[in-house]
Amino acid sequence: MDREIGFYDHEYGSKARSAKVYVDVRAVFTKDGQLRPTSIIWKDGTEYEIQAIKDVRRAASLRAGGAGLRYTCVIAGRESHLYYEDNNLWFVEEK
Image 1 (cartoon, rainbow, N blue to C red):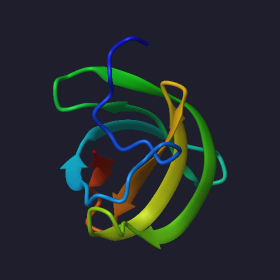
Image 2 (tube, helix red, strand yellow):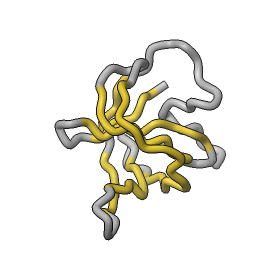
Image 3 (cartoon, one colour):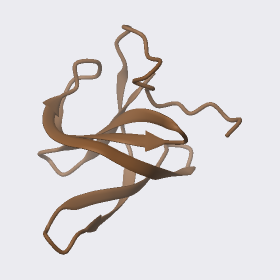
Image 4 (spheres, rainbow, N blue to C red):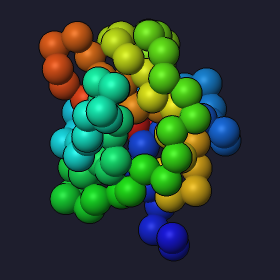
């Protein structure tokens, strides 16, 4: 993908503080009750498929603030964190 994506890339990231950006997410519940996001819809309306979920754990975002379930995802070939907060909102860390 030639276009630069605005969310924080954890593989090549910097130590600068990121902004919390709330996003729409398409997700499914598996037959065993797990919530699995399948794509995110960025603030400009572009939808990005989540190619893989590498890890799910309860964690805080030290870069943008906030906490909840942190999904370590591969989106557009890059690893990023997607958070599902306790208030039922999804956010990513914008670079």
